[in-house]
Length: 341
Ligand code: SF4
Image (tube, rainbow, N blue to C red; front, top):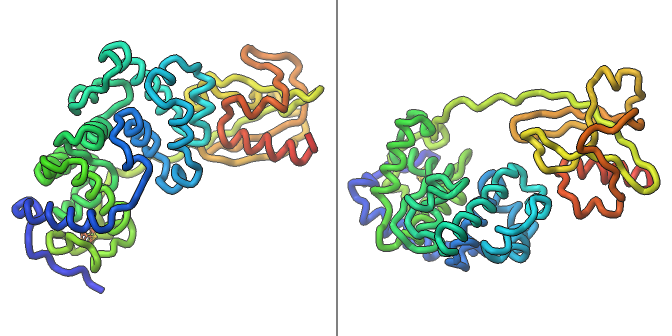
């Protein structure tokens, strides 16, 4: 069925637009643990966690609650070891996020006497906090009139405006942020930003927006929602082949501490060059994706002739305490099961 035509422009009729959106949200708002709090630390954790990790996955595994149980405030994370913070973030990927969370906590503790700044401009000066996250903490924790634009909101706004240029270009970002600022209800920033996000998550979805039940359909200028937003072409995946040793003895397994940018701080299987492994019998092959890399891991059951820096034996019973990237942990679990370790 065709999308209904708009009767009002959202920006020219912003009061009416806000009221319509808020009325819908107040009747339909979903309940999330991060909506039950106005504590800036908890909100910052949720915002950082929900970048690149879906709401469903965070909720299903109680990642938000578990993380806050381990680090209930900035003091606890500020003094934690790298191993501890990586272990707490394991499986969520993009590990610089948790490193930056720790740095942000340390900065608030040392430079702001332990008190989170409330305005978006100051929040944006904290490590790892961009314009979106600064606006989210400012509006959700302090109800300050700070606009936010994430992927959901950019999609909704591009459709409301019928904007057919790239939303992630400099010009596109400027227009989308200006519209978010213009539409924001300054007296109800927390509610309004939550409502706009939720509209994008539930009704104005990427592939099949349900325009016929959309509360703001009368304001929406586009007739071709599924063609919007227009984005820059995506980065291509880089294919990588890695050759690793799988060696255990006396209930201990050989692991190596990662120093490369993809796995810094994590324990992984010891890697060698393809030439060093050429004469060895292949044990198995595993394919997985990490950020923009598609990795094929060739695994050899062999003892390396000598250990390299950072390589060390670990008791198999202690693996659960170590930070190990999810694909490698899956391989270790699979091999442990196959070999009855
Ligand atoms: S669902 Fe999205 S595209 Fe459809 S009417 Fe609502 S805002 Fe417009």
